[in-house]
Image 1 (cartoon, rainbow, N blue to C red):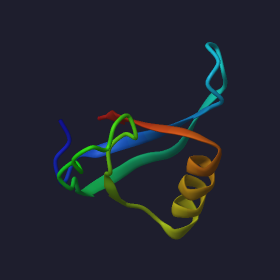
Image 2: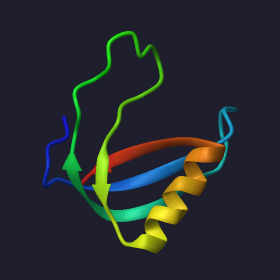
Image 3: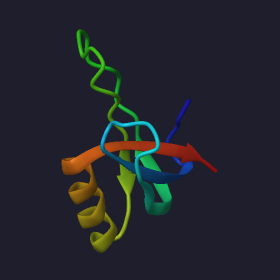
Image 4: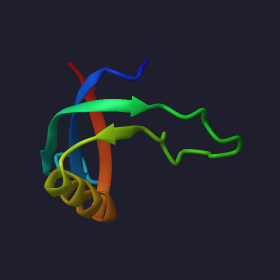
Length: 74
């Protein structure tokens, strides 16, 4: 569904329990690449390459270490 040039918000979901906390960690990030899925990746999600400022990249990296990330298309 995503293509290069799209704008997305990135949401981090903390924990896996229903009703867990979620927060927006990037707003209006530009999609630069959506690589083809890797065979036998299972339920690991998808890779999306985003163009964001350095501080936002640090927030994204930190959020991905402790929870799952999801994108919402503008």
